[in-house]
Length: 188
Image 1 (cartoon, helix red, strand yellow):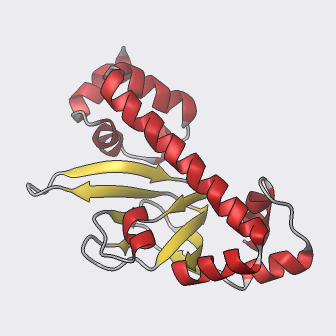
Image 2: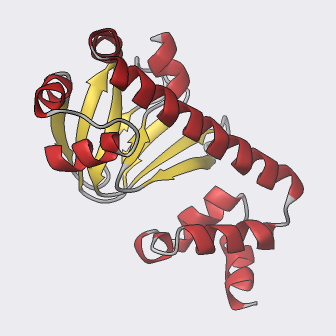
């Protein structure tokens, strides 16, 4: 598992063996079972999870109990409730496992300590955060300016394996449409 994290970090910042040993000392590994909730709305968020294997979803449940999926996280993805994690407040999002998952996680305190100890990691986390902001901006722009058909085609083009791993009802929730509408898009 540690080699996967090292390869991921080294896409942005090459590390010596000693530097990676320092990095790894700030992470903890944890396995989760399918359907296990790892972040609950209303609870404090202490960890940011790097997904080694498996699949997770990030969602918000509205006052009527309707689930709105914000993000799917697959291998090599970082998952948390960013607002709650960085502000050390309670979650407004829920994160749960759609498959068995292997993760490495880091607390905010360990992340800040690691960034102080190794500037390469500050650079890495800044780049990853910037990438996530850009992805979220693209998603928001697509939601407000693209047709549902275009959103569906974007999803299928960029994440083809998602359709093999996730029930259609969850993809429909992610797109903000009914399952029937999704079926019509898939057959068009």
